[in-house]
Length: 213
Image (cartoon, rainbow, N blue to C red; front, side):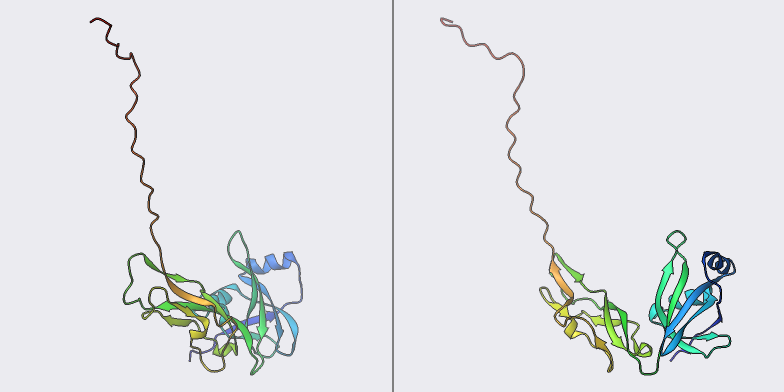
């Protein structure tokens, strides 16, 4: 198991847009910590530290330790975050404390692995679900659910009920929902074009033979 990441933080007393701008100018952002049986707490943390967590394979599902000066170290997870639409940078984060044994709703990506052995002409792989919600302890959340499609044939589908997860993980999706399938895409047959009539010649019509000639 990888060593848990620790993010240093400081309590935050002042609020408002001016304070938020001041924090961002020094590479920090405001965060709010709540849940886990404790009171809500406003703090500041390094933007680079939090952004680095989001870039890991687990991303928003990463459990990390938040070490706030003068407070107990808490295991937390991203609950929500705000992104500046102009610069595409995180400007605020809500972090949720995790109580021991607590289960949370998590969103996990679904990855298709392998290739179908035989595909008829026009067959393509259609992935209807790219992520799925599960209920589990955050520390046990899988980085992804891998689905082997090597035995999938034309006209067949893989459903949620076919997914394999570890003990203690509950899938929060209808069992009959389709995850992936092989569909046949036919090229639309072009309607035969009508034979074009001979073009009408514009000009002087041929003269009829004169009577008696």
